[in-house]
Image (cartoon, rainbow, N blue to C red; front, side):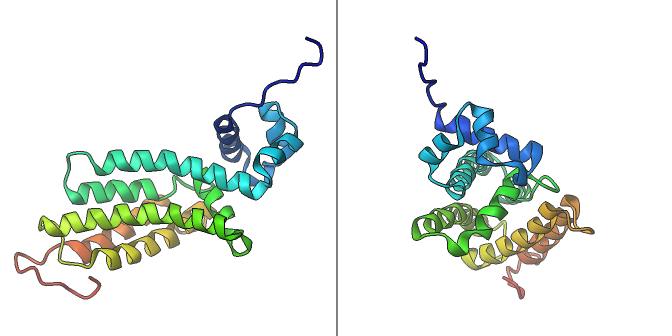
Length: 208
């Protein structure tokens, strides 16, 4: 029928297209008009569904985090030592390199969080909370099995994630002198210093 309106693409298709645009062109090229052209929608229709670009970016981040969460669950439930799984967690956490699309998006969303409403801030906190809870559970398991020193899992997790965030931001923005391999080396040293047992005495050194 002439003039029939094209159905809007599924929400996930829009989020996939948004992430692909960030990966290929950078966040500065992701406009509602450009995304609309990519998915066959007008920018007005996109705004109708997402209300604002900030909401689009947050939903895209949540979608990306969902994929990472599934991969994290797979890595953390496989048959391996706690330390092997912890290394896999770190490897998944740290950006692939400069302009990693997930981290580019993460930085943009958090940059806007000061002016975000309570709902958006709660959703951002949920993203962080999922990473933290999985890490705490893994550390507690390693301690209970005697693989790790008797650290406080929640306290150690908070310190480790602060270290990971700091280094990861440097990697994502391409700060000279800090690349992915260097970051992984620093984190391995931190884990060795903080978790490796001193012989069989189980003594806890400073930093636990």
